Length: 357
Ligand SMILES: NC(=O)c1ccc[n+]([C@@H]2O[C@H](COP(=O)([O-])OP(=O)(O)OC[C@H]3O[C@@H](n4cnc5c(N)ncnc54)[C@H](O)[C@@H]3O)[C@@H](O)[C@H]2O)c1
Ligand SMILES: O=C(O)CCC(=O)CC(=O)O
Image 1 (cartoon, rainbow, N blue to C red):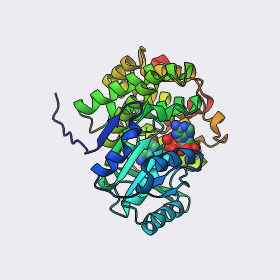
Image 2: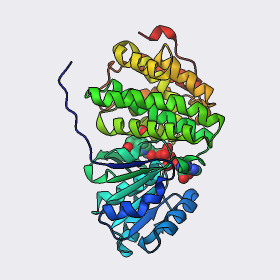
Image 3: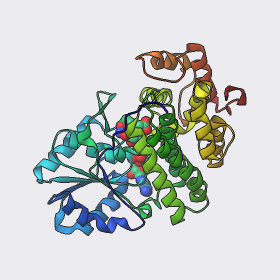
């Protein structure tokens, strides 16, 4: 066994169907008085529900969270939190809402109580992203890591099956890259394998019956583990490509992860054979990249960049951007191979078995 470093971030997790009922207890345990409740406009009803549950402990609601945290939105939310004297932020929603909470925590001492309703995993990471003048900047800061996370699968029953599928594969991507991370360690690799297994088991059952609470619980449990992997070890080519594609062509986040993952894994297969075996095993397949592709197909998820809005004729530009700024990846970045990867992803081809170990 190689030497390794494992550090455990200090989040308190409350998991289980109906666990939202503990929200007041959790505000008390944070030592907070009154909370500002954050949501997207689409999830205003969820924010209202939390506000009604906590009654006079609700200092106000800010329901304008949007994807990628525009700086203007972050400023408005920070200002409202200040005006209403909130000493805690409750973020109920997906990565966009958690991200807004993080933007508040970055500039104030407010602890975040996150109540995730997708599988994106942001609630378990110290990673924040803020978009200014069309450019998204990301960073790591322990101040933004939610202090408490309530995982209540009942809140995910309304997550549309299409977003359940792509958000679940977004989570699998964190775990898959965690297994071949430069700073991987055996503990986080256990989380990764178990996270992929739980999602691979839960997602098809969610598609068959979106109200299946056992399946919803499996998926949220998997998302928690995969989010922990994202927060603990470094990501590589797959995440870099998704940020490039998402930022340059304004492609939807979870869908982009879903399309790119099989091809990023095929690219890295020969350079990370042990990780590929663990991914394939967790997915119940023989080949990691093909098993992810087949899972996405079985879940009726998008398979090509073309169908999610990437324009034609942009692959060379994308390769150039992806080659900028060196970062760790099991296989060195090679222009021609990256071009093939993106061409396969653009057209939605199933990865070839020959690329696997
Ligand atoms: N910092 C991190 O560690 C990290 C990790 C993952 C994702 N992210 C960021 O999070 C964003 C994407 O998050 P996302 O994929 O969770 O999507 P999202 O938060 O943008 O949610 C997508 C839509 O689904 C709605 N929704 C969420 N949960 C629902 C539910 N249970 N029922 C009905 N509707 C629901 C939301 O209100 C929104 O309209 C991106 O900006 C991404 O960069 C950050
Ligand atoms: O907050 C961010 O945008 C950076 C982390 C992230 O998006 C993880 C992912 O790609 O799913």
